[in-house]
Length: 242
Image 1 (tube, rainbow, N blue to C red):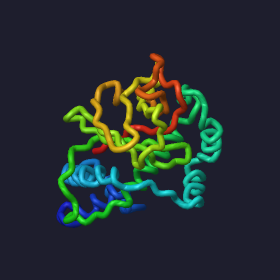
Image 2: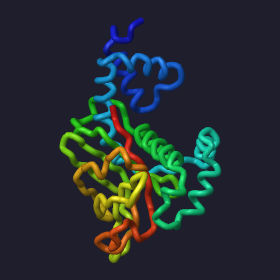
Image 3: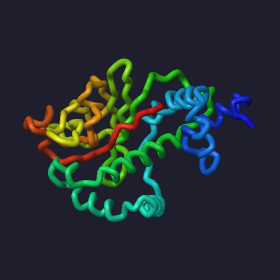
Image 4: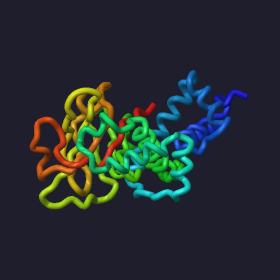
């Protein structure tokens, strides 16, 4: 049976695919259809546009210890986790020694967990702004701390702390794009509460970016021209939506 003959089924499968509740053989079959079916691609993109912005309003959740242990075993992250904990207060050149695969994997897990908390009742959804890039930045305990949502058409992105950050009055949080080579690029200073809209430039989403990071700096931002001067608190990566 061609699932395109059943529009309601197509819509239901697209929603479950975005949420991550479509699993196993059903998910693989859907992905095969998705590669060549522009209708399914459009439906999937529409569900992503509806659901992704709602992740901004979900609070941080702490999974049970056995959940993370199972993830670590499947991804081979046990030793990487130990290294991250040992280097939590290392110098800002962390990206030259840390496993970028580890942090990318944890960012995707955090993003998926946030999406799974969103309801799929279409009647409760409101029209959402265009979002084609998303990043979740996490701390050294794999807790989501910062959410970035980007609109390439408007050339802006929003940075929103999941919870108010306990930042001293003489300190600031500064967001960086860390390239594979060269010094980090400052993307802006993040207020300790609320959200801020920043310009989406090539410095923020260039192909040479290895990771995104947030450092704790003196009030107003890093005084050094070469990059962060304080500890790195959060890390993550952009994920491009369909």
